[in-house]
Image (cartoon, rainbow, N blue to C red; front, side, top):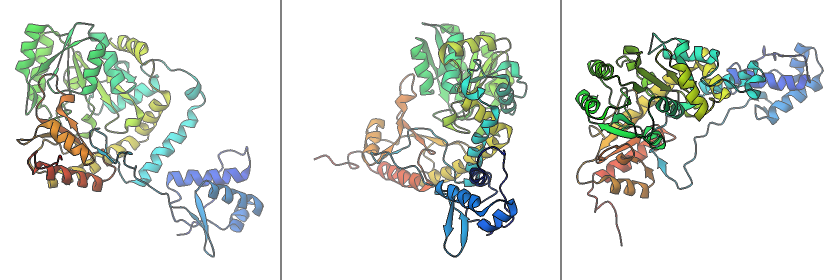
Length: 458
């Protein structure tokens, strides 16, 4: 495949031309204009096209080759080098750790290049992005982008009610510190996000576990807690609940919100997985924006590395929450926030989310083929909740799995009250589908045996 018509586009006339040639090659590879295997014009042809001397082009190609961008093939010409996409190696222990609930890696290399290109384009925002602090809660440009992202699920949200936080953990810490103080009670599902338990412990709060059924949190349990404990807030994850994957139906959402309003209990809605699920009921924040604090992390739907979460708060509460952010995490990383805004603004975020959803569906099919009908899953998520068959105790199973190189997380990490005999399996954590398949086969094989038979002690 030849690119005889390709010529470099120089962004500036400053600096050596040979470096500009190499930089142009790098930019066009990142944008997809030059794909792996493309044959570049001969050095002499390019020198004629640019009206420069042959030596300058030679130095430019040599610079690009030194960067690993191109390669010369004897008797054939100069070609764009194929990039090596390596999967992440196993941990030194050899463990396939499915205890972390990570979005799966996808194999769309063109999209990956565009993600990195968008990061490099942040240079256009100038030195202030690197050398200046920003205001807690995010600059208005990023808050407006955040509003456009949230509006897909919370249509009524406006920029004056939206803040940018340092991940879900930073957002939850700020919100919770505004709503409750040491010794206060906060209601949670009896199986809840471990990070929230950690925050509550740090703030010296009491957690009141609320019973759940197959549809999520039970309204009658919440009502009893409101009558007897006078909670300062209620935290829940109504969409693709972690760890159970359950999604609360609309009727129950409305019933819970009616109770919260009647007892004047503000609600903290963790919507970490909501962007993955387009066919779920409206978020609590869309139904009751006056009492709901909506936290939408980008870690599960875009990238854990961004450490960015968007927070929609009730009217006239933004300043208090922003001040709490200032006191705890100070500001979100301007680089991370700008990257998120760049991805959302140019449409990359939607493409990345869709790739994550598609890869998750592939992994879910592998799970259902290997462990059919014995776990709770969601067609849009990437974790599974497995209630253990008798006579397997959770501690012994997790220990046995670890001894053969498979890591999962036991229910105790989520349980506010008594922990059930169950484990959560992160389907996105293994580097490849093949690695996931091998791990699930090991799990299925162990579960098919009795605990005493699955191991040998001498």
